[in-house]
Structures are given as structure tokens and as C-alpha cells.
Length: 302
Ligand SMILES: [Zn+2]
Image (cartoon, rainbow, N blue to C red; front, side, top):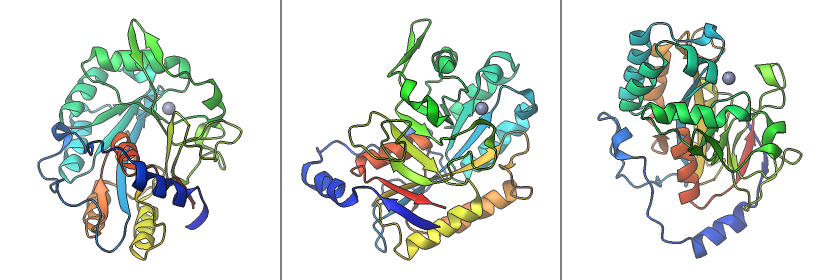
């Protein structure tokens, strides 16, 4: 992984140090902390590096039914086992699944009860309002995360979307693709946190941008391990870096990997926990940690 460019780090850090309001530190909400997770009261800055690496995990359950979790108990069991190991889930269910799958409501509600967060994953921004409404009608408040995103849609994003009187406002955009279908060259695999302000200059950070862009890397276990090794050596000296692993809901394996199943994922969690600077957090909580730490913007390209 090589560093492509760094965005106004010094100035932002300096500004943050001097003028950051004494807002209370927002830690992940207590109700979403699994009992086996290490306590969150440890100091957030490790001794060997100024960086905290927040690792999140996501899945997309698409409208096409070949990605639907057909075995409710097996699916929830996978989420429970990985949550017990410390992983914090941010899941995006598309409109067709939410509306048509018999077990969607049960999966959303029971997973939310174990701390899973539900992001807003839509292929058309027109569905944001309805997706948020459906989740809320099931008693699960959606996060402000747009989970998956066509960069060309950025300029048309509204500050809020309403459906049946329920209003939802995006705050974070996760991922970002230049073309649909995850074809070669379409996906943005950068590890990044910044505020973009337009589709045409999507990689440019502007502190005045309304939305936070979190790029979660290639989502592969091996790549986040390389990143962690680099951070341990003092590379990428940003206070908050986010990375997202991604699992396919129909196979319980890391997306596109034929081998990285739950056993590989649990072994990975153990190895990552050896790094004092690693935290497990949802996508929404990672973005919040970045805000709390002063919004040092960066983009690391793989
Ligand atoms: Zn989708």
C-alpha cells in the first residue's frame, strides 16, 4: 500500500488542537457493546503510534434474491459469533430484500438487539427515505451511513429524505464506485476519511463538506493486516483510520474470497487484537471517532 496524497493534515490537526470544542467524547453506545469486548475505558491513543485503526464489518443484502440469507438461524448465529468475538457490524439491506424477504424484519430486529447497526444501502437515492422508514417502522433506527454509492450521484444528494413522514439525513458515505456492478476499475478501494463536495472533484477534501466519506479499503483480511503492520511501523500517522471488511451474506465468507470463512475471520480478529491500536467499531462509529479526533483527512491508495 502506498500513500497517494495527504490532505491538509497539519493545518487540520493544528486547528483541531487549538480550537476543538470540549465536546464529550462519543464512544460507541453502551447498548451495542458486546460483553466479551475489551473495555472502552482504555486510553484511545496507544503508546507506540498516534493512530487508532478502527475496523468495521459490513454486508450488503441485495434486492436480487441470490444474496438473501435463507437460513435465519444460521445467519443470526454467524452475526452472534462474530459479534461475541468483538466485531461490530454495519449492514445494508436493499429495498427489494426489506420489502420482499419473509425473514427480513426478524433478521433486522434480532440482529439490532445484538448490536448490529443498519445502514442505508440503496441503488437509487430515491429509495433512501423508504428504506429508512421501513427500518424505523420495525423499531430499528438506521444510521446516517449511505452504504455503497455511485460517485456520479453525489451532486444530486439531498440533505434529507422523507417517506411517510419519516425523515432521514445522510451523514456518511461509505465506499464509492465510478461504475456499477463491481467490475474491474469500478470500485474505490482506497482507505480514506475526508469530506468531498462534488462528484467531479470527489477525491478533494473540503472541511466545509456536509458528508464524511469513509473508504474502507479492499475489504480483504490480508490487506488490513498489511495496513496494520504499516501503522505499527509509523506509516500513515493519522489519528483515526478506518477499514471495513466485507462478508457475503449468502456464503458467510469475505467478499470475493473463496477461503476466508468464519474460522479465518475469528483467527484474524485474534491476530488484530495483538495490535494495541486496533479497535472494532461500526462504520458510523468510525466516522464519529474521526470527527471527535479532529477530522484529519487522508487517502491511502492500495
Ligand atoms: Zn446493493
